[in-house]
Image 1: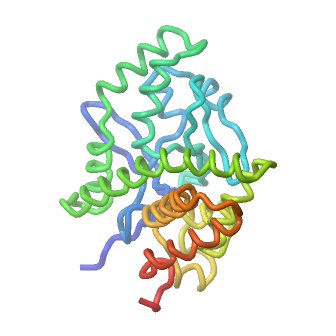
Image 2: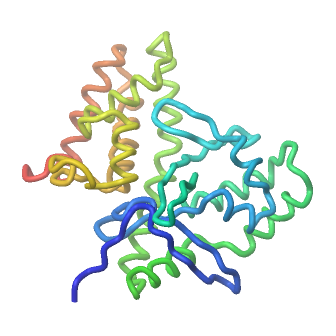
Amino acid sequence: MSKPEFRAGQIVPLRFRRRQLSVVVMDPDGLGPGKPTIGMGFRAMERHTNVPAKTISSRVLRIQGGSVLELPSGLRFGVLRINAEDGNTYQVIEASDWVELAKDWAQNPGKLRKPARDGLIEFLAWFAAEGIYAQAYTFLKQTYTEEDNQSLYQWRVSREAGKPYRQDWSWEVKEKDTRGRYGYWTNYVYRGLFGMDAAEMKEVWESPVSGSAKVARNYIPESIGLKAVAYCEKLVATLDMDDIEEAHDEAIRLTQRKFRKHLLPGKQ
């Protein structure tokens, strides 16, 4: 029996806890080969939280490397624009991020009106990222295995674990680079590890292996890539070298060594 093929932009209609919703495949191999990441668009979130889609869209900022949704608290979440198979273009946030987003926005509502605040709280009581992934995988693959569950868990842990280390890296850049070139050093890490800037790598993760043979041959799942970036930035802060470029070079070298199997295909 051939394995199902997943596509970025694929629409997945789901019924979860007596509600109907649609999610979008973001990266067909985001959690590993054949294990896609899924997200929800702003219209879907409006239906399930009472926060107007226009309010959500108004908080989206363009930054170097992509777009983010910034909440009143200052917390940011990555936003992807995806051309879906239904002919529409959606701004999408990964499904498990919506839990943290709803929690933070409910706690720090800013000018958000009471129906929207109440909707966010109700959404938190209803939504479970693991359950949504289980339903989506069952629809897409006709099964949701323990391996799928572990892949999701490990991916989410790797993302959460990288957050405090990125803060340490940010302080290191601020201290050692008087111009505070966070975007420059982010791209320095991505080029050192993957051979392309952050924005280019994220485009590959959005539409994996759809282009050149080189990308297809050397494709690195987003889950592994984010873990490698977090590890590298942690090393930059840990090394605490006076020369910020030398610190990044050494951190990249050590990260390549640790993730040799994934970053250097065929050279294990």
